[in-house]
Length: 385
Image 1 (cartoon, helix red, strand yellow):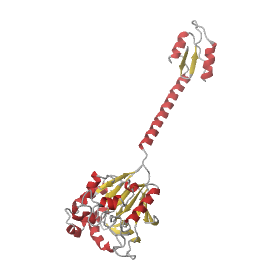
Image 2 (cartoon, helix red, strand yellow; image 1 turned 90 degrees about the horizontal axis):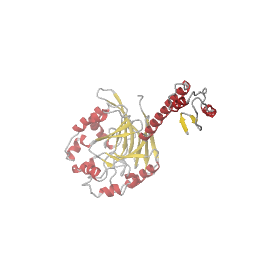
Image 3 (cartoon, one colour; image 1 turned 180 degrees about the horizontal axis):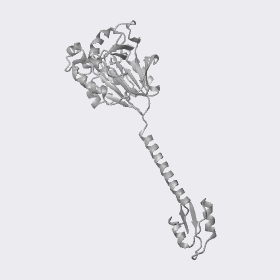
């Protein structure tokens, strides 16, 4: 018969009477265990050893067995932790998204050329394009009249490649989308037809999760903040409810980066520059409470990067950064850019889009034209925290 206990293999090939010892037993024991030999006075001692209950078994062997068990348990725990962490991870440390606006013109006015450049960029981008963000004026000139409006095909489905439309879109509204209070048809299309065209409400928050942090996109509906649009478009709402909501949207949680998207700019070097004072009066009291915020808009049909020192509610200086990406179709409609503008760091009247690469410690902003060529780049470093 053969029996095991720990690493000691005990072979009993002959039946022994009480008091007899089998020399092979000691030799087998010595080959396996590096402790002093143990003598068995009788068969009962051998039986007790097999059960692990011999009071005369060496304490060193017992300690080694205990330590071995503890080590094995420790290794098992480490393996479980590593496997569990790996299975729950898989989120990236970097993400990339592209921003463009003022686009829906049935494929005309370089809309298709811009769409092709965006597709080419996303086909090779590293990290990959995780989101397409529209800065508004999605369907000219009067929005869409229903969920089955022909423009869903002529201005979206047949213009942007299937691979680009498979990327989630985060959509803001412009004044063209509000014509005759039609904005809700885009919301309904998002909910009932194509959820990747994400527009759950006129204004909303979209949190984007990374491996060790998250960022927040605060999507605004800026059209109701302008008196001329409230009257001219016969809007059913003003901006008061949105401003109340904005307090929580900007201050809840702990996102690493906060990016605000609205159709109309807070800084501009084109002909819409005269409108910025009205929007600043509405939004700056809220936005200047958030350090290191980035504001991204469309409305001006070109590409711009601007920054300027503005004042918060207490008169303290606040450094505001602004991207304008409104060159999704027609460009130059707003007249030449004011190159002498103190806030204009970069501006070009060409079709194109903006790529935003998000890391834990920095944002990398790159402007591209329709040749998929980078034409300007800027980095924003995270503040020390």
